[in-house]
Amino acid sequence: MNVLLFGATGMVGQGVLRECLLDPDVRLIQLVGRTSLGVQDQKLREILHQDLWHYETIEGKLSGFDACFFCLGVSSAGMGEQEYEHVTYGITMAAAEALSRLNPRMTFIYVSGAGTDSSEQGRTMWARIKGKTENALLRLPFAAAYMFRPGIIQPLYGARSKTTLVRVFYRLSKPLLPLLRLAFPDYVLSTQQIGQAMLAAARRGYPKKILESKDIRAAAHPYAEKQT
Image (cartoon, rainbow, N blue to C red; front, top):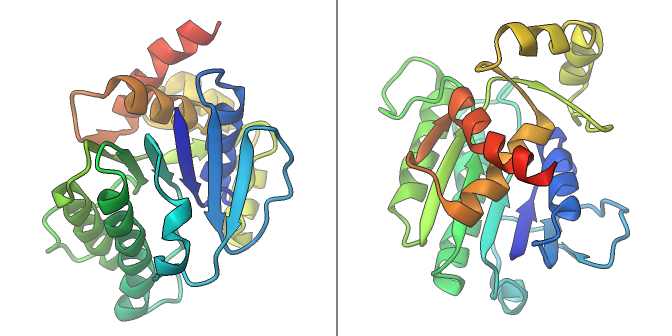
């Protein structure tokens, strides 16, 4: 399987990349982003691309892929609706529209978030825009598309957020997250589980197009058993 990965420098993306590197069935992982991750591996390559709203200049490097794991995203804190939509909806759809044309047999997996508003009519700005993005992705002519909506995430194996407030939250809550995962396994996921669930969905599919935390955990479970 050849995989495209957007957002590999973020917390979720770091976890997904680790699982892709460990998976013997993944032959190639191509990262697309503005900054280099600085990781060396024989099946890893990077495309540094500054304009994430336009892909015409690198289209020749974006075909021949079986799956795209789109983990790129920003916090809505301090952003107006128009600006947040320009980044969240605009960047995602620019990439997805190009990829659906170049790779019609591709599985596209988008990391959204718990509480996303599929109606696009709710009060919460970020949830409406995430819902709009999900709905637009599901209309594109991919072979399959899945929307992942994780809630609380436990970062493992060195994965860390680029957002200062998020890093502080996880540093303070680090002793509690393993306990919360045991007590509420359907609501607290690890970065490892998210990566494993993406690989499983890309390989075998999943009965639902929108996966909440409990669905992501269920998708990851047989994959984890296979790897042990």
